[in-house]
Image 1 (cartoon, rainbow, N blue to C red):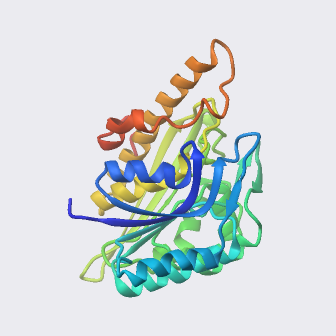
Image 2: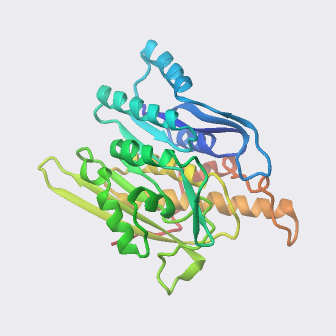
Length: 325
């Protein structure tokens, strides 16, 4: 694969695999060059009882980016963004994406709009609420691929989602579908909490709350002006544990596999979700062994077994099939 460079602007933790630490390794394994900029720097993810660190602001992001520009190395094929806690920082991300798109009209912006999740049917934000209008008004309009969970999709659309049809209808309203670049433009929406552990309310009765679902929708505009929309659905059996960092891993691998399979959303999602399955199965097996018989694993024991899953990330055995809708 020819050199493909990604600017990844996400959280950083010293311990564990979330944000840039969850995205960098799999993207490198899959052949991408990664330049990582931190939105926050924490000791560990916030699923632990205690965490310490810093939240970076727009001035600090601008200073880092200015250094890249001065050296004329601000050339990217992809931008990937995730967890952010500062409103000014997020607005600066948009300015950077717009500038990079002026330099490279084919640049693809993959946005995981990390804002919150649902637990026991109730949604809540775990970032400041003033980030929502920035995501709605500035970020989503410049994104090419977005990966919200159900709660985040409801926040972005202002609509409650009760069914698969309602979920797919929401995706049609986003600029990723109406303003996608020629031959690209993907909107993939994992309708499940980033922990991959809570019921999926849009699952049909025959599968029930033991399953999560992923809905994907991609609109491709061909050189002759014709437009083709592909939609897929994947049903995933729940793992009885709370993982952190899976959304970051999902977005990174979706970037990679849509790059390798640009006109086949089904295959890209099957490889992404199957790799996720292998990582999580290895993680829960190791965590349960460490915790001991009938003991609940701790957040430290449930850190994703990323390095141990290198082969599965590189060449995932397809164990979760997608249905074309």
